[in-house]
Image (cartoon, rainbow over all chains, first blue to last red; front, side, top):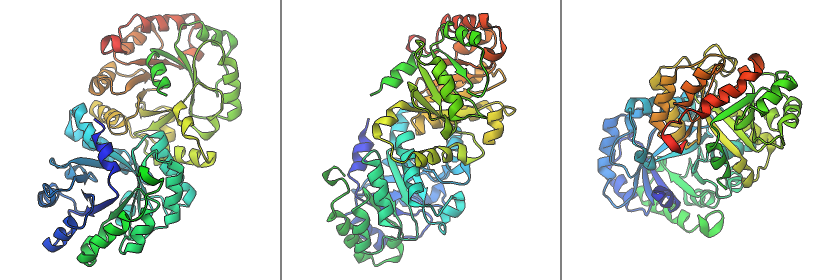
Length: 245
Length: 245
């Protein structure tokens, strides 16, 4: 039952769609035709089950794996291939590290052991203090590189989390910090980077140091024709640790 | 490299010694002769590396496995068989869920992957609001049984932690809550109970619903002759889920 691990390993480029943001059909079609490896539905504010369901209906069955990032209980909608649970490691409010998940589990009541096989915890490190997620979780940031590495090691080594997500939503981050994390984890967890990927050079720079590069805002704000260029830039870049990624 | 998992499985009765509390030789000898399965060095306040080292020197090599519970960076002393890291799931201060571990990892610097094999995260649920650990971590408690179960499910299911520790330090808890947790986890994680085990009836009642029963204060405050009676009471009680425990 390690299916999701295998699948995640193949994800070099992921597109994140926000259920709370209107998405024109032409932009969605450009995403689906871009060559991206997977679509993740996730956002920070204004998420409702109805919005998640509506977006899921538009992307499911279109040939790409679809994951839902469960940022609040309402986003737990059936029908996705995978469920990603962001565990915000540097949250200043413990609700976003454990409490939210504990409450969701309580609401769900009995949860069969098999269902956990579809659930992947992501050790989130929030990097951009000006982002909505930083404000919501009262994230302890900005962080020195050594702190980011230590959070990542904590997630991978101590908690055994399969994914460390470096979240720089809205602001392009520092590839050298991502490289330090990848080097410290040495394949022990998948390193995902998201934030400010709006041109091929940036996509390539992060693809060289992260296992997975996430494109989000650009889907809504950029030129849809360029979405495939971002994917190509990622694909043409050798992953960290060579062939393994 | 799953050695520690196998070893933990055999621990039905554990004795917890506090490096900050003076321990008479006759009491220590009674512990070592009691039949307990393992000794854990751990406490909440006043822990220094010197105190941990001193206590470790007295119990190491006496025929029992010795684990150190890393409640602060100072307790990370070499020479134990195993290192348990309490992740306080219902901490009101996020430092005690992630921050303390992140800081410890940062202090240690590079930490070889193999070293993690000796480290076992414990999902702690603090049950007694009047305990020192509740005050220190600003624990969100008391908790309804459904909340305790949901925290435990979060630790075992979402975080994949091998141990859920129901900590009722200083006050005997409710065996029916422990039973609910064991039933919900169904062997997915080892359920450890500690708190107020000061007579054989209580030891037996908790041994019937928890995989591991921890005796702590009684070592310091009780009649040393009775320590073996507590062990016997645990041993004579069939573990939850029958032979597996």
